[in-house]
Image 1 (cartoon, rainbow, N blue to C red):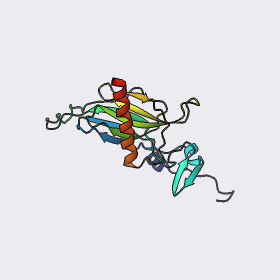
Image 2 (spheres, helix red, strand yellow):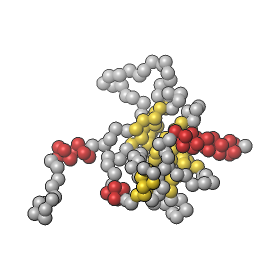
Image 3 (spheres, rainbow, N blue to C red):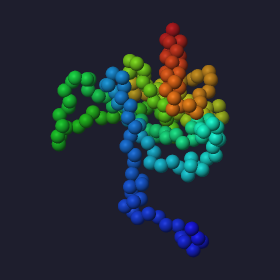
Image 4 (spheres, one colour):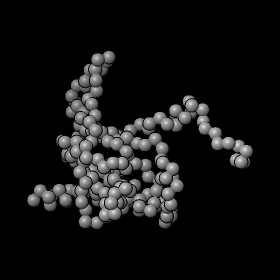
Length: 188
């Protein structure tokens, strides 16, 4: 591009297509009675794209010690589904699907990932990358979503989390194990 060539924007139809919201990420609970809908941002911000990253053994790691090319969820809603084997609700002009309720207690702005459910579907877990919190709260945090209330709560852990290996199922199992151990200690 030369200095004489001005910056050009795409035609409005193409811009509308690029700005369209992405379909939500979905996570169905093991009992198939809850559906977690996770909103995705349309595109990363310029700051996210321009952020410095470390390269270690073929992995790209951001300064916050998480994968630098990770997609995040920016909103969550929980929807109750009819039990398996129950007749489906009527469809047609006047029929409405069960409404999804926005999950309460989410940090703002939300950068969630690593969603998983407990075996009995009562609790969902996810991680949140806090880039804007106070010095002691920045970093990756674990949250528990109580399915009965639709409320998310931060889980205080003795050690900081790292999502460098978040694509590994072992990492997710470790998070679930830690949450269950904390709940057992709390219920005693």
